[in-house]
Picture 1 (cartoon, rainbow, N blue to C red):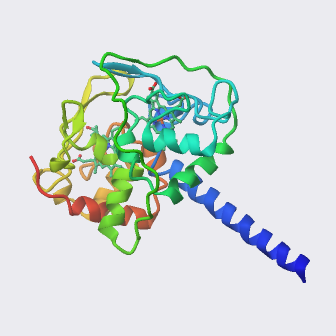
Picture 2: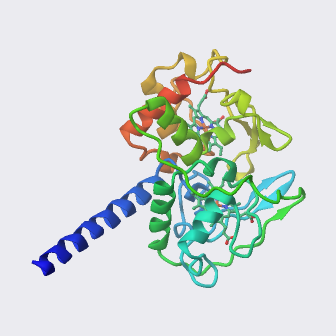
Length: 277
Ligand code: HEC
Ligand code: HEC
């Protein structure tokens, strides 16, 4: 009997570990899209190199940032980091040696990531294929902050029963959509105008400059006039109602796999944004 009890609790543990890995796989390969920065990509925005082995440099007037190799490689990746150290990097922007991770990694948003989800992401990262690839060091012309705020220690889950609240969580803590879509004032998102857009980005392949659209109802030509299905098509396929393509700065190669429930929650949240110019 004891042996049977031991076996069944082993089975329960294994099932829990499977569910955690599945959750991490879903998140990283859909709404969170760590690979949109950390995986090599082609000009079409689709991954075209070993997963999470280090991405294309991201340039702005104040930095040249090189997204790190976050595969479990022992020398050039994060194979030597403990789970707690990886969680600290994601939510507090701090490496094991105490240095601070710079932009554009959206630490200010990832601070909202729940313990359950950040652990699931770490479980997934652990089993990605290790790739030896040394990535150049980023350079910043601005001083990095000493920290991103009080240390994040524990974050509860957001209940899915509240669609708008869960959509907020998806668009902020998980997907950092609102990082790109909320105006930057002196390098910080002005959250009193969340979703109002207006940030500029170098287009992929150096083809000019893109501006993030205003997603709030103040934009009469934007999502306020679209059906829910049209908003979902824009997010997951990068196609506007008029058939125009949205440039793949957004991670369509990943967002195409956002679940139907999560798409509903994202739309509910976007619809709840206060009008902001
Ligand atoms: C918007 C682009 C972007 C996204 C999305 C992003 N990162 Fe990063 N990340 C970076 C950049 C750029 C750096 C290097 C910053 C620096 O050099 O200070 C970095 C650094 C890191 C580091 C530090 C690695 C080291 O060796 O120093 C870890 C760990 C990390 N990211 C994990 C993640 C995970 C996990 C996700 C998804 C939850 C993620 N990142 C999403 C851009 C991004
Ligand atoms: C890296 C920055 C970035 C991230 C992250 C991002 N977006 Fe975008 N988004 C943009 C830009 C830039 C455009 C416009 C691209 C263009 O002009 O072709 C855009 C376009 C859109 C549009 C079309 C709106 C319109 O009026 O044309 C929607 C809807 C949208 N994003 C929603 C989202 C959602 C939801 C997420 C998160 C799941 C997200 N975005 C993540 C930068 C971003």
